[in-house]
Length: 492
Ligand SMILES: Cc1ncc(COP(=O)(O)O)c(C=O)c1O
Image (cartoon, rainbow, N blue to C red):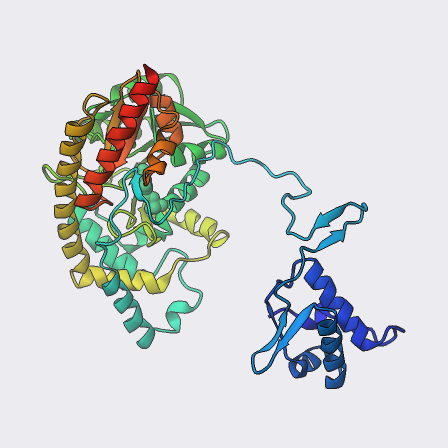
């Protein structure tokens, strides 16, 4: 509700009658767009109480406004701003006539975000070819909401909504530490775990804490664009390292370290973004050794750890780290759904304490109800059952996507079936002109929800298979084939 006492400022010392003061104030709010067509107004009794006038005065003011066509009073429904108001114009101070609207720009300069990445919003009715998202239809949402409901009925219901631990719900951290120890061999306790809103927040906090302007941060050549963007916005200097079928080349890392001081390296070992390759066990150990020798941080973004189809995953670098080099980051975005904004980082306590302070001034704390509901999901074995089920479904989808892509698009694309993850790194024939690809796909009901800059620069993209069911996969690849055929004809 609007703060009516401030909006309608009654001046008893003014010569203007009170009902006209009220009328003018309401007309002003409508003209400035702060009161919208059809918006409910307080009844005359409430209005008189809210602004401290006699009820008769507000009745007369409303009658005047109704006579002028600004408001309508609907019997047994209430008082509303009139629905069919003409587009209102007002005169700004400089005399220019403008439409009443919220200002489009600030009157002060805004620092641009360096290397911003674009977020695309797909149309709900389209099939989305994304760059590797889970199928939220498979997520055990009913169980999560049931867990939330039982918490809000239980003895903790008020405590969970009070100001709490900056680092995340202690009970969840305890359960998660044990889960990470069982599934990834991380020798961590709840003190080493910090809960964040997705791993992007973990990355943001860590990079801002350890990177100073001019510091060198190593990344794979072609990298997760969001990570590059945060590094650049911290003032870091990006140095790229080649990536081959065994992941980032640690030999090249070694060569760089001989020449310059390196502050950190950002890696996606399971699986490299965007090419989907796995960092080999040998290179993991080599990188750990280099980080200890040259004292740089390893930011291990293990977003895809759970989804490995051929064999089991390789243990994270963090599970071998005894010197405090590795900051391990993970997320429930792939495991459950990207809208469940829960991620985490695991690191030595001195870093966690500094990050708690940074978080204190950014977000205060996470969502304890959801965190506690996820604890229950893990303790009841529901998360593990979901993982088993989705892994099976995604393996089938990966195979089907690869088969269909091979059958329908082989003359236009080149790819290796990925060992894990949710996407296929697909390289397009260099002769194809792809500038109209997204528009052509969209006109046939397929939304290409991928990083356009990677597509433009590398003539390649990740094509996600996990979020589509089998019928959708066949339809999407068929349409992709049609559009690539069209691109090929346009090229020749
Ligand atoms: C490389 C990489 N890291 C992390 C994530 C997960 O981010 P978040 O947990 O913030 O949703 C993604 C999501 O697509 C990703 O591609």
